[in-house]
Image (tube, rainbow, N blue to C red; front, side, top):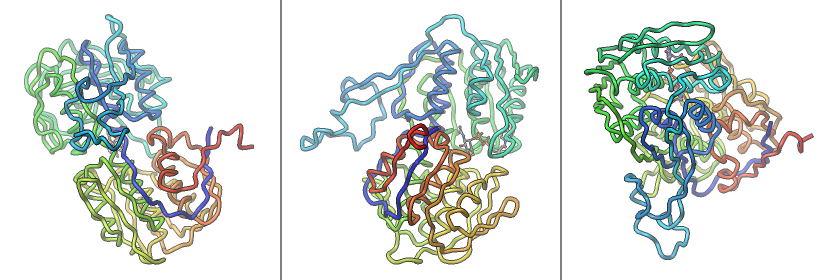
Length: 457
Ligand code: UD1
């Protein structure tokens, strides 16, 4: 188990590039179950959740390998960003000539296993994304129920209700969900609440169903729209993804495709909050400002100067201690303020002047970072689904424990802003979703070192 040793305070200054979105890459990998042809994905982040998904797909008969692709000619990627060309002869490392890695997924075994085992599913809830495609393609799927989770109960009832509406027979037995349908049939289905992976699972299933499916009250997250773009490139007929109502006209089969995963708005947003909390100045490259609008609006209210240009999104903290203003926030499904940035925002509010209330409306039990921040001097009072933060506080280094992915990011940012040494334990949570965070932070001037447990005694 690795830990981070951080010496602060250091202002984060410079440029940082967002990796591909973990939450868009996971369903994209699951989509490869729907075809025998190769699916080529660009900008897949090298994080643990993606390695877990690759292992799971391997069990299900789909192999994956990273291949280097050089330049646009040999590059089948149709969505290479505009800023990647033309080549800049003064920059030998120009993105056009720099080899790029693509992840190629293809069925390796003709007879598919349709069993997603507990050992893999328990480590990552998003494994449930294989349920829809396996059922649609093979008429049967057996997937372990995802276990309890550090940020609340997180049921999958909506996934199952939706698949049942498409004609699947759904049974729970021995900790597994078993679904069966000779061929799914299009139907109208309304989610009781918007669920991101629930919407994705239904899209993955409905594109091979007979007839038309109309899904209402869908999650509107950009990652849902990204999955629909990939599926359409594979031959699916999906319209309206990213909106409340999505229509899927079923097709008989899907082919391969090449697709570039969208930038990770949560990872990118974390570095922008990092600029704000440390009194820094960060340019986030390869970011989509529209996807980050709820955060950018909030940062502007807090007093951070936000500039959006073709080069990226620049966040500049105001000069002078105590110049950030405390502002309330409530998390909500997209286009609301993302729950996945709530913990990082709480760290920021400890440095702002005044009292702020942070309301978590998406998940229960998602304030586990609060007592850890308190160890660093923060004044946070949690009451049910609300937390009150009194600021500003001079954060001081301490030993703290990461409890989940986003809580880890919050503690790392607080550590960079704090005076003295902070040790963040259980960094494996962070490794699930942040690609090379210590390297990116070092690039912005932070003093962060990864220390392996065996070396850290
Ligand atoms: C996804 C993201 C996660 C993010 C979350 C909310 C992935 C891999 N993960 O998780 O990072 O924090 O969206 O933006 O994309 N719910 C039900 N029944 C269901 C499904 C969900 O009651 O069948 C509830 C959940 O308990 C939660 C809410 O719906 O309260 C939203 O959860 P959901 O959007 O499903 O989250 P995930 O897709 O698991």
